[in-house]
Image 1: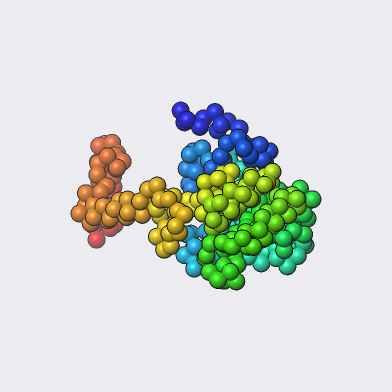
Image 2 (image 1 turned 90 degrees about the vertical axis):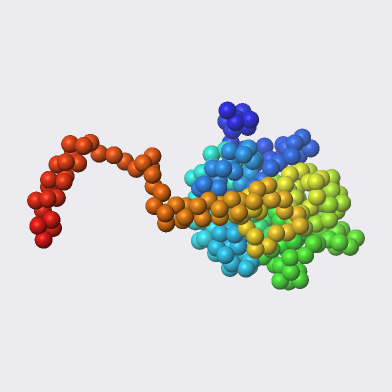
Length: 294
């Protein structure tokens, strides 16, 4: 039985996430498809984030900005097929909420109704407060995201650590407090100096989830493919690869190709049999067939 079997019996709720603050660390993993969701859930993770990072790790794009709402819905539905216990959060893609409350409500409604997620995540600080308030008032739980904002990386000068001055760190804290008051139930902090993230975490009532934000956040999130060593295009400093999955899978595939070429796969143990008498009947039928006489 899994060491997480007891927790596996009950679905993780928004209240569970809120209640973890100060009591235990929350483990969050990204997931993009059925098989990934099954494995991530079996690990005992609390939350699965269907991130727009799928644009890079699943679709081979250079960034997240081209991911569409339809693509997010497609992947959210696949993840929901493999998840029964974890709280599943769906990313709102670039330009599906920035233009105003109505657009945010429409996009989030589709993610929840068609994608099946139970909460949505959007990037930004005080500039997205109207959208956050509207979503919360409509009954859609919201996860905030501050610090490095991948959807706005170009405007931030690239994928760089944020809040490295006292002034910018103070602005980040004000954003965090504002998002909390607007109704966010959890807050992702990305690429923020650990001492800054620790101070923000201590001043919030809601949990913080760090990614490159040090050990003092209330939880951590990593990309599934980074954890397993499946994505080598870019490995940030904050990533810990727990497995060199790309190498292991590559060797397995090479062995398969080799055995097919040699004719050693499939072997008898991978093949199905037929009764001898049925095979003899088949041979007789084949001998009398037009193809055999030709």
